[in-house]
Each structure stands twice: as C-alpha cells, then as structure tokens.
Length: 255
Image (cartoon, rainbow, N blue to C red; front, side, top):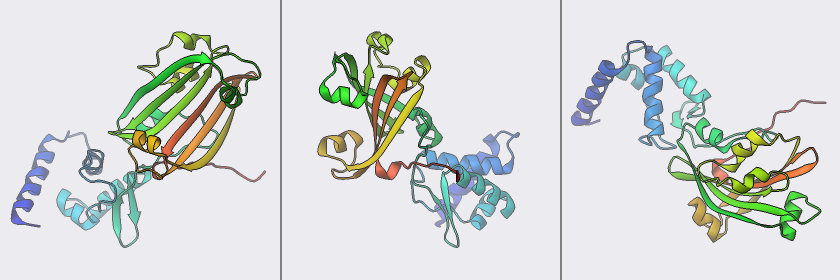
C-alpha cells in the first residue's frame, strides 16, 4: 500500500468514526462498511475481502468482533468464506423453494439490490391454440398476454412472459400493469388453489440475449408455472433467468 493510499484509508476511518451513530456497535459498523462497499459495486463479485487481521487494524478491534461481522455477512449470502484463502464477495444468486410462488421483487431485494420493473408488451386477444395449451383451456376465450423485465440493480434479472385467462380474472382487462408487475397483482386479488411448476434449461437465442444483456447461447433457467382457482385456469407464466444468477432449492424429508 502506498503512503498516499494509507493516508486516504486513515482519513476514511476517522470520518467513519465521527459520522457513525453512537448507538451502533463495532461489529455493526464493520458489517455496514463492508455491505456498503459490496452493494455499491466498489467491491465486485469475486473481490477478496481484507483478511481478518487487516480488518482488526482498520477498525481497531478484536478478531472476535471481525469474525462476528463476517459470519453474519456470509449467512446473508453477501460473501463466501473459504478456508485458508479468506473471504470473497459472493456471486449474486437468488434462491426459492420449488413449490413457492415468489414475488420477483422479493427475490431481488433478498440479494440486497435495488429492484425495478418494466412492462415491454401488453396485448389482449383471443386465445390461440398455443395459449390454450399453456393455460389448459378447453374453449376459446379472451386472454391477456404480457412481457416484462425485472431488474436487479442496473442489470436485467429475469424476463417474465405471462398469459392471464380473462374469463377467470376480468379485472385484468382494465389494469395497465405499467406501475405494478402482474405477479403480485394477481396474488393480491385471485386466491389460487393449485399450482404446477416446470423447470428446464435452454440456451439464449439472440433476441433473449439482448433483453437479458447476456451473450447468445448463454445457459438460462426457465421456471414455468400454471395456477388454478378451484379448477379454473388463471395464469401461465414463464420466468427466464440467466443460469448463473438463479438456483432452485427444495427441502424435503423421507415419507
């Protein structure tokens, strides 16, 4: 470390000690400092966190205090602790149980990232043969077809492609879905009684790659879900995530 860099770091520590609220414990200050550097992208994924001994010197505290803060960061998924190698900023990755109907906004915020939603297309039309197959409809009816992008920070997090059976949800006819995503809107208005998930992988074609800001042929995880309300099809949704940013977790026990 250069003398100039050392002086700058010392100045930052002094400023932090002046501005930090007195009510914050030392391990909370360490926690907040590291979290802020990660979430601001000052420390990108893969960046090595200073060793515990370095943090002890920086914050003038015991190794036990530093270890407590790092353990909490690891538990929250922001950092990875590797034996003998140290601690590193984790690659962003969301998790959800297979049978959960999760709000994408909650997934993004669980990563500590700012959430943003964008409606790409909204079309009301008579259900096509493909629409009826996806929704499980036996008769022709009007449906609402939408494409939406969900963002985590400044990066696309997933593409949502959704069909809504308007005979089951007539209120959707007058909803613009510009300000609110269709998923939480439906969950707050239509009590579902059954859901079925299909999970598969596919490589991104050029159009999808452009929308998700990834390279063509990048592996993607697709979570498809169909929901019913008392045996009446309500919606079919396909959520496409860049494979490296998503994993599915299921907990179960022997019968």
